Image (tube, rainbow, N blue to C red; front, top):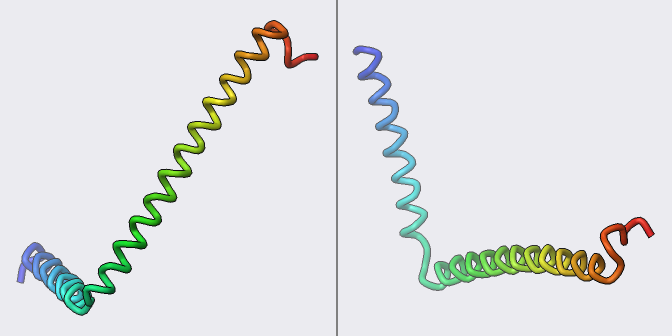
Length: 80
């Protein structure tokens, strides 16, 4: 057997094994288990979005505070 054909057979065997394992896992889950997985994914996604928007809000408020301080005390306010 040539090297290319042998590598192709190995790749095909691995793909079949992983595909079979994935199929067995997916078909073994009940509707309630899919609901739990979906709920977890939605919860993690919601948390990540909340963290991102909080980070943006903090940056926005810091820029606003900088502008207010410069307006009130001038450009060298942080050296006071």
